[in-house]
Structures are given as structure tokens and as C-alpha cells.
Image (cartoon, rainbow, N blue to C red; front, side):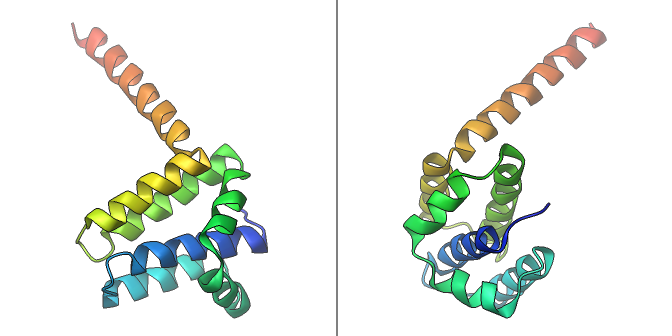
Length: 127
């Protein structure tokens, strides 16, 4: 998935917000953040800027991404929440807030509906 430098910074900013949400930063979360940085091919500068990016700015950047990019961001954020194998209420609240304000929730709903339709089709073939 291709992202611009500013989009990479926004993703890093959101990941950082989720990692810091429960006030505990586990080693797994640090490793995962590094994996995200590597997967996005972020520079050290992208990482530093992303870490300091205000949440509102990151949300606006993600809101303006394509559906395909938003879907990839959703996958990254979902994986971030479970990186330390502990899902906290704070992380879930931030995830819900981010997905709602960026339109990711609409993409997730559309994907869920498509999965449900596929399951219905499969079930009707079995009958």
C-alpha cells in the first residue's frame, strides 16, 4: 500500500496514541510500532513527526485517504490494540473515535455486510 510521507506520519501518530492510551507501553507495543514503521517504509523523520502530530491533524489526513488506504489503516490500528495481548477500554474508545471520525467505520460496516452476504450465499448453496 502506498502512502505519502504525511499519511505515514498520520498513521504513526494514531498508532502512538493507541500505544499510549492505557498509560502502559509494553515491549510488544514498541516492537509492533517498529514493524509498522518498517512496513510503511517510514524515515526516522516521518516517525518523529508522526509521534508529535496532533490527533486532530492525523484524523483529517486519514479522513481524506482512499477507501483502500483507510482499510489498511484500520488493519494497523486493530493490530495495534492487540499487540500487547491486552485490550483496554481506553484503546477501544480511541479506536471507535478514530474510525467514526475518519469514515473507517463505514468501510468496516460495508465489509461486514459483504461478508454476511457471502455467508448467506454459501449457506444457501449447502441447503
